[in-house]
Image (cartoon, rainbow, N blue to C red; front, side, top):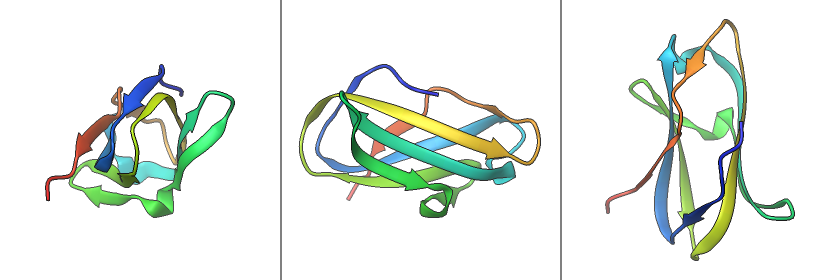
Length: 95
């Protein structure tokens, strides 16, 4: 799955993924990539890089500068059928 281009501001951010049916614990692999036009990767994470926060799978990002036209790509595999909630959530981490 790929998002439409969006802006990402500087700071510590959490990208969250929730399952609409089933559980994110059923995921056997996940790759999250944020990239600029032309395919330049800005951030890339795997399932091993994520943490669980209740029913949500979370990746933390430290973004050092304002970026425009970022696209997010998510590729997942699960042990059984799973429906994911879209869009992914992106929230600033409060200090």
